[in-house]
Image (cartoon, rainbow, N blue to C red; front, side, top):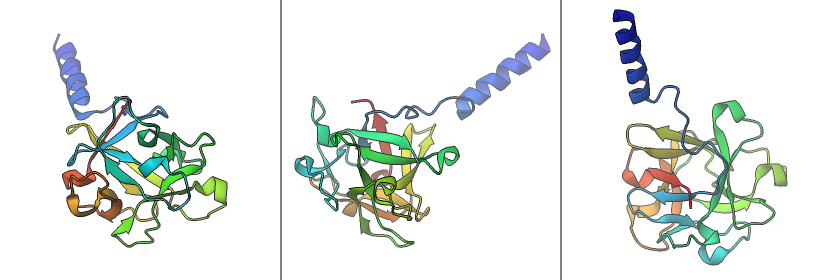
Length: 182
């Protein structure tokens, strides 16, 4: 009887700690990526799919606009480490990824660019570690090129059109994200 109680207590503790539970965003998607601080969706303005176009935040539309849907695809070279491409679902060819050329710096804008497998790019500017916080139910999205840099909202603004950028991780709600089905 004591063994069963001990096992039940251990199983309960594992569930509370998130051990053995699947990350809610393991499937490819599509998803909406919502900033916790502003409660706005990551968006490509006017559904612009041109390389180098800005990525901003905008009020989440209902039904969700194509410019606000994202695919989280395992990175082809970093699968075991949880790295992902964040691809624009509005791009029918799935060539455009969320990118940011950080190279160990911060305050760099996030933008769309060809995914590294499409361009032959040897950098990891298009790859992100999507880290789930079980207690908060939120994600931190870190750059593979610069692991101390997080996806953020520039100036911690709540305004529509606020730029999505990369900044040193410091735990702000403007660096936390909810990844939800559309």
